[in-house]
Length: 245
Length: 276
Image 1: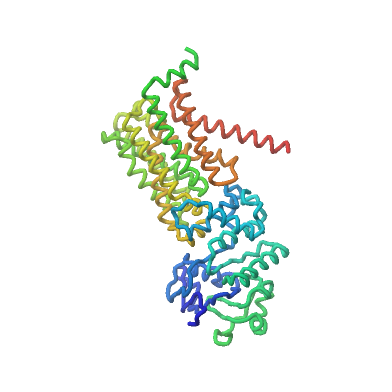
Image 2: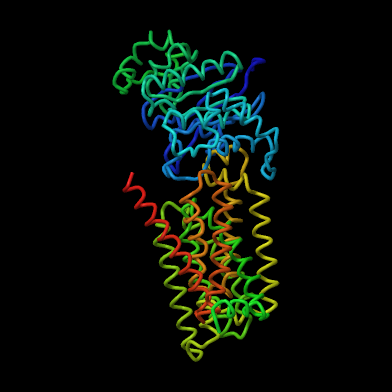
């Protein structure tokens, strides 16, 4: 295991009842990686994310945190089905502090400063007292990203964060992520269908279909012909694991 | 005697002070717990539990035991079970609550009919009666509401995180199962302490209405909770005094006051929206 490994995923398999969702997945996440996790619907992308987050129990194998253990998470859906949920932007971002502060602490002046600073970083300082349900989809995404970032995570996992955004908002959002990755050396895993849009931002592609079928650079991913149908039609032709790495 | 004189006279009676103390204790705990339940879409749990409370009170009366102390473990246990059923994706939670409420009601009614039918004592447990509140009820309500409020204050950020986004709360190290179980336990306790002043069949309204009214105004969660507590406390005090003046059952007066305020706000807001 090299020195800058953040997480070692060692031969994990995950089941939903009798259904095998992930089979013998093995890879390392290195400090500063910007990984994009791709695959068709039902390929196990979200399951892998949930396993890393500790939300889904693994059937076999082991996930070892070598450095740190704080994970930020931006879910696929903002969870705001109820647009009238009474929560201000500042209140939502502050929940990211629970990991650091403990479950029973009330937030103090310093915590409020941390929240304010984080909102400023995301250009949302004027929205602190607004109800989150009144914001646009892109703004809500940024609030939830700020919630994850306020805990100063070692790893940030984002599940299809740009799927509901228009192109301008998507580019803006990805630029923010790239900045966090390069300037703060934040390790990122971004799950997406639209792998082409992530090129230029992420530096590593993991291609999943219950098995890990590819782990490498964008260049190699696009060069490897078996994956090209996936990019355009989301219908991959499967290749053997050994041929891909 | 004028209404004002009658109102002032209310405070000369010991039972009125006991009712006000119990009422305020119930108002605060039901509004705090209710805000979480409504936003977690668990409001129907309170409704189901109020029927269980009726059955528990009936069993207590039939067995010649203190109905409130007898109800406490039964309603709290039922609350945890209902929560589990509600969380189980394979069972339709609302249908299960409906079945449980009807079964509990049927059990209570059968027990009551076999032991001489509905009497004044049971009627007071159904709809609340300020005249029947004893000192032990005051102590019971005060102690348990302090525990409920203490629980919410001690876990405020965790409960908010859990209510807003359960997955994220879990990632933050919150044991969601355990917290939801505690929430269910304290919901059960709140229902029981509300039996004397509000009544078993109407206590669920006090869990739902203040939160729903507060939601019409607040942007933030803390604001909603504080407003719900204020609304709940004022309507309980107002309802208790009105019930004294008009000689109505306390529980129904409080609930009607809440629903009146809610519908008034709803109509005014709808009218304003139509104008703009």
